[in-house]
Image (tube, rainbow, N blue to C red; front, side, top):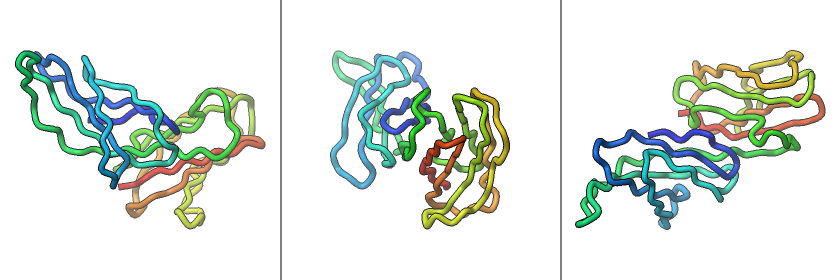
Length: 177
C-alpha cells in the first residue's frame, strides 16, 4: 500500500489487487481523530481530494470478495501519508516541489519544476528552522529536475524542505521515519 501524487489537497492511494475481487472499500481520516471517510473503488487505486494542507492522514483498505451476499476481508494494516505544506507563490504546474515516497524511510526523490532559467537552492531544515543540509545550490534550466534525498544520519521526525528559484520560495513538510 502506497500513497503517491501527494499535494496540498490530493493523494492517490494504491494497493495490491486481489485476484477475483469484486471491488474495494477504502477509508481514511486525519490522524488521531475518530471520523472515517469511506469510499468504494472498482480497481486497486483511488484519488482522494479535499484534504487539508500539511496534515497527516491514516488509511486502510478492505477487499470485497462478493456483493450478494456481501463477503469482505478485514481492514488492512493502517498506513499514513502527509499532505504538502505549501508556502510561496509557485503556480504552474501544481506541485512544483514534491517528495516521493512521503514519509521518507531510507531515501526519496524530490521533484522540482521551474518556469525559467534561474539560480536555485534546495535546503532541509528541522522544525525549529535550523538548516540541516543543502541539497542543491546551482543554476537550473527551466523545466523538471530530480534530486535524491538520502536519510543517512537524519533522526526520525518532521523536517521542512525549502526550494527557492529566483524570487519564489516553496516549503513542504516531510516526515522522516
